Amino acid sequence: MDPEAVKEMKIVFGRISKGAKTINKAQLEELLYVLGCKPLLKEPYISEINSVMKGNKATLDDLQSKLNAMMTTDCRRDEIKEALTVFDEEGKGKISKQELKRALTTYSSLPPGEIDALLNMGKGGDLIDAEEVLNKLFIK
Image (cartoon, rainbow, N blue to C red; front, side, top):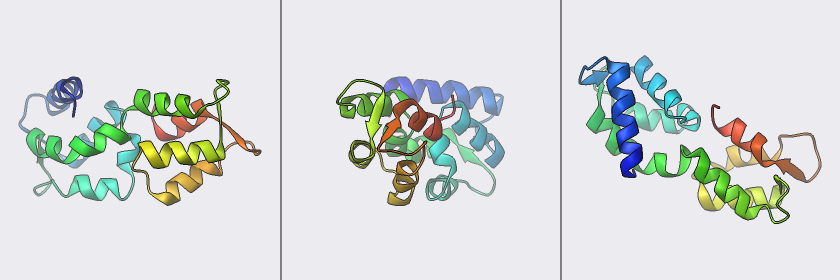
């Protein structure tokens, strides 16, 4: 996790936990939503995150170690948007299904099934709106 993401996570954790050293599962889900980590609330990610729960509690340190690799690719809307922009060869905010597949395969750890679902969304045709993809992946 980059230092800014760690700082943000600590602030949000402190607010959600109301100063306690642990959070419960419902608070964990709230934490992920607030951080913009919508993809991590689905399988297989949520099972991995839940694995750090001790009973119904998780500490900030436990969560940080588990989320470290996950947040660098799955939770950063701006990074994914930048990647999509790179693959938007015409600069029109639209990306071909082939370009989208290449971008998501290269820059995310989304499972192939989720990538295929994204490729099949939209209004048909070969072009998909990049903002629509981001809205499916992340909470605004």
